[in-house]
Image (cartoon, rainbow, N blue to C red; front, side, top):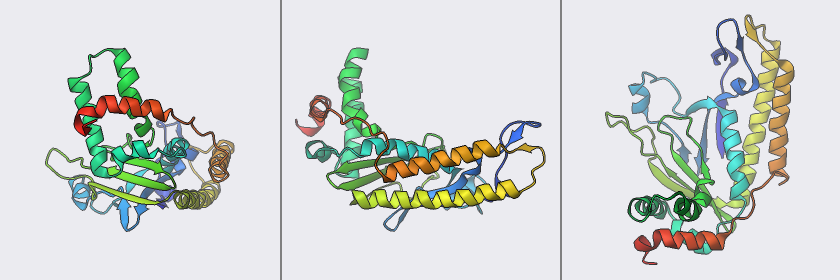
Length: 268
């Protein structure tokens, strides 16, 4: 489900300023990573964008700390656990419908919103928030893609929209849009397997950094081990379903708000 390649320690830049350099647990998770949805690897940069940025020999995958990726996925799982009811899912049961839903929200703001904070909170936020808490955050990337995880009954539906381009018209991402679905429990099992594999890799990474002599770079061994244990504990809580899940949304209220926002585009 999730694939990764931890960087070698020699390729990880210490954090801080000269004289106060350090390598903490977060820094040691520096990796290349991506999902595999069926035969599709996502997110994956185009060769053209790597050439544009003079990085032709660099892997085409996200280059960032895996810890951030893991924390963000863990957060959306708190919401994805609650299935979206059929009567709401029908509005977004394909990537085409998802984009129509997004456009309808924009249209409502431009045409129907009276610019009052009260109406924004009571109508607009209620109509959209349930969806956006199921969106994986890639805000730390330039031109980051949109990736949504929607559970309906016992299936997980995954949609991506990644059409960002440079001023020169060079596309960042190989897959501009798409969708994938599978059994929800198999999806969770795949995530857990990936997280455990990453945990094993990190234990090896930590052993290597502890054995390595580092000059002028602080290594807080105790804190690194604490952070690794926190990672392992969170993975265990996901596997045992003991993590703190979000409250079940008020789907009836959400549906009512959605109909007020979307009526003109959906003939409601």
